Image (cartoon, rainbow, N blue to C red; front, side, top):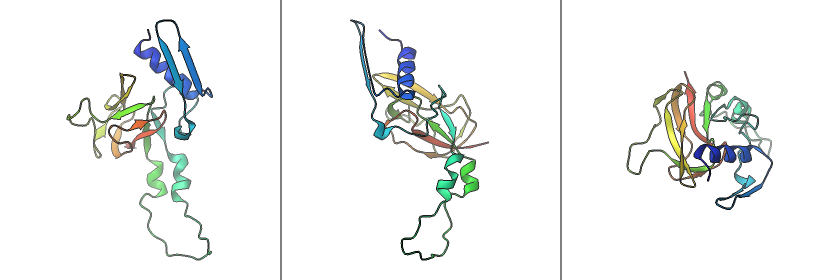
Length: 168
């Protein structure tokens, strides 16, 4: 039988590798992991074993880019919701494993964090459940939650953004 840490390590390793399907059986336990690349986040850092917080500064150009007009016409400038300077300051807290996102410890309980809450690196912000194993996800950054990018009960993929934090 696998320990919780062994399962998490296996899931992370398979998530970072090019392997699409992994089967294991030792007579007592069977494990099958199949990746669906349609949901795999390219933003996850493939070299790191801890992708929990990533700057999203590399997306600043995409956020600031304006769609091209097919007719070539100019339109008046509309203020952007997030400017490039604001985007450079934000950090994503991403899923360290695949699983179901839960904002609170149990149904009906208050969520771990809400938009506007201050977090510290050790603050638990959510839990992910996979195969009846619950993994607490900590912020790993000091700052303020500005967006919750996953919905309660939603299945999330490895590396998928869960929260957006404005660091202090």
